[in-house]
Length: 375
Image (cartoon, rainbow, N blue to C red):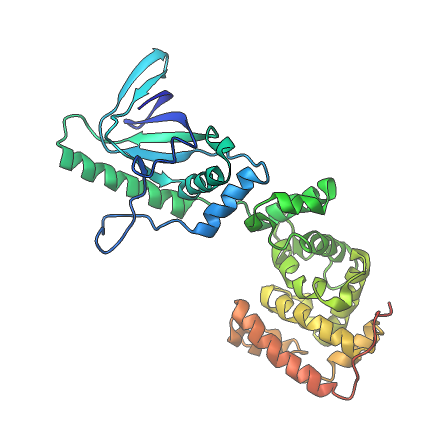
């Protein structure tokens, strides 16, 4: 196999930057994966996940997406590079040597899936970096062992050190994307990108409204790129806590401003009952991920018990009837009952269940009201 390529050298190790057509990557005997099995304990990869591969194939073939990132391949034998101009030239790889996939397995399998649906994707080019870590003077067994070790090392480094886009930054972009191109754009993106996109932009807007309004949340939300000092919770955590509200049937049809006003009154009522916890969020959990997760998840039930009258006073009357969770002491980060439950999603669900039961017991004489709520 000969490929036009650029030769690069980093700390004495050579690699080659080139491209391969999808049809060249189709040959499973030539382009291979070193799968870990009990019979192959030196392998370092798992088999590809069909759903992930199919998703990439659909992204390329159906959504007309592009894949600018290179895949990383390795050859476990010496190669010949003939320079033609500077570090650009022709790379010759022995025809009997396979190319081992170090990174990019799902993209390659995805292209294979795309080609099965349409031969038009056979010439689809994919950027490729080829590692060549063996030495010509090494015996075959030694160089194979050395190359395999280097492949596994690169595989681990890539997968342990790479970090995806922070969710708060991704959320901001997806929000702009919908405003610019409309909700139809969702169909054109992989599901891993669009998970939650329908309600996320609304939640981001509400977070900004709460942060900028007078009340319990003023100045307490940490937005990406801004100083964290003085804030209580990240934009991402506050956004996630709003999912049960924005997906609840009772809150459909309301604007972001209206939902923000409902939540502002709700948290002002909580402030009246737990003033110390709200005034010193660094010492209490009420405005951290667990407290906000529990209390915002509880909000649709509280709203129902108000009889549809979502005033701050009426909300407070509902909350005060529960004997659980409506004191600052309950949310104390060191000695409070909330902190003993834990801090993860499971803890949120446990605490929410306990507070829901107490709330329903305290307000059991109130019938669930008709909608809409009155502001």
